[in-house]
Figure 1 (cartoon, rainbow, N blue to C red):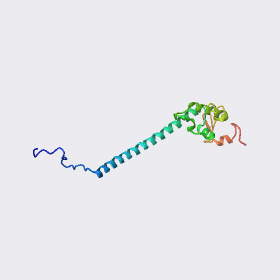
Figure 2: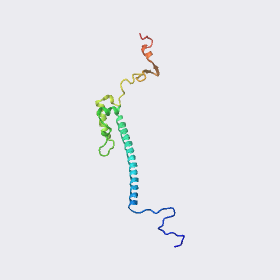
Figure 3: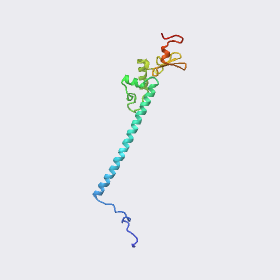
Figure 4: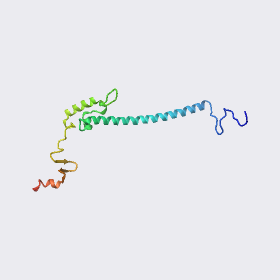
Length: 159
């Protein structure tokens, strides 16, 4: 071997040889374990995020399907003491359309005011519609205020 050549087992310049022994192996194992724990924490966070997203999607789907027959799904669920989970297939976890349909049919039979196919009472009578929040009556595009209403029918005084 010449002076310019280095033996193959010598480390390159600027590098220190990897220490051997039980302490080094324990340190390496500890570092691998720490990386694995970090990766597990990342995967668990991702799993939790996906679980929350799936829960929101399933809830939205149950509400959508019920909303075809029930006008106020949230109130219907509260009145019946039901939860979204009650409308899932126990084996697959998928939305069970038959359970939803059966429940909605029974519910609107018991509470006909919740029937999504009906218009709520008092919403429209001829051309006059009431707007409870605005305290106004809308008649053919003309807004009438309280003073107009209290004055009585057109052409008469409110006295």
